[in-house]
Amino acid sequence: MEQEKLLEVIDLKKHFKVGRNHVNKAVDGISFDVYKGETFGLVGESGCGKSTTGRTIIRLYEATNGQVKFNDEDVHGKKSKKDLLKFNRKMQMIFQDPSSSLNPRMTVMDIIAEGIDVHNLAENENERKERVEELLEEVGLTKEHATRFPHEFSGGQRQRIGIARALAVKPELIIADEPISALDVSIQAQVVNLLKKLQRDKGLTYLFIAHDLSMVKYISDRIGVMYMGNMVELADSDELYKNPIHPYTKSLLSAIPLPDPRYERSRTRVEYDPSAHDLSEAPEFREVKLRHWVRCTTKELEQYKNELK
Image (cartoon, rainbow, N blue to C red):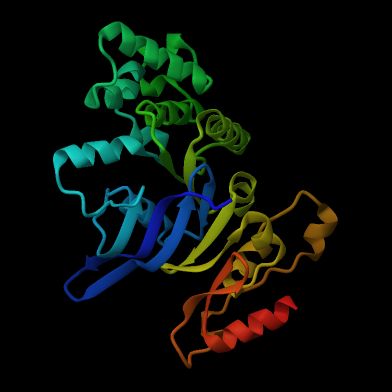
C-alpha cells in the first residue's frame, strides 16, 4: 500500500546575507518527503541547517529558492490572509526552549487558548475553558495549572504546555525543533513518550529535529542526516543504524555512548574528513539501495554499493 505524502520539500534553499559580500547558505538545496502518520527525524550537529529547515517549512523564514508542498499545496506561494490562517492551523511547531517560547505575562489558560481564539474554535468562554483543561490533562498536567504563569513550572512542565498549545488547533503536522535538548535527561524520555502517545491517539505526523541520534532512532520511522546545509543520507531508522553509508553518518553514530563499560573501552571514534570525497563531479542524492539515499558522486556510488555487498 502506497503511503500518502503529507509534506514535500523540493530543492529547498535558505540563504542569509552576512555583511556586505558574504552569504550563509544555511540550507542549500535539500529534498525529502514526510508521509502521513510517520515521524521523520532530521539530525545533524549544531549549525548544519536543520532548525532553519523546520522554520522555513513553516514559513517563519521565507525560502530563498525551492518548494515546500503541504497536502499538495505550495506553502510559500500562499498569499491571502485566509490561506495563511488555514495553513497555520494545519501545521504547528514545538520550540526548543520552552522558557522563551511562552509569554511570561500570560496565564497557561491564555497561552494554550491563543490558537483557539485566533481560529474561532470555541463558541463561548465555557467551551474555551473546557478545551484548555482537556488539553492540559492530555499532556499530563491538571486543570488547576490553567491559572498559573510559566515561571511557576519546571522545564519539562513548560514543554508540556508548549505541546498543548500546538495541539489546541488540531494540526495535521507538528514540527518539533529540538523539543527535549533544553530538558534534564531524566525528563527527556517522558516528553518523547508523551509525543509518541499523542501521535497514536490523534494520528499526528511529526518532523522531529534533534542532534541526539539515539533519541531520534527511538521516535523516528525514517531519518535524514544533514551536514553543512545539505542532506547527506536518508533511510529507514533501523537501516540507517545498521548500515550507515556516508562517512559523516558513520562519524555521528560512532560518537554515541552506550551504558556498557567494555564497549566504551574499545569504542573507536570515526573522524569525518570532508576533503576525502571524490571531487571530480558535483555530488547528487542517489539511491544506493531500496529506500536508502546518499549524497555522492558516481564513483562514490559504486564504492558504497560494493561496501554493502
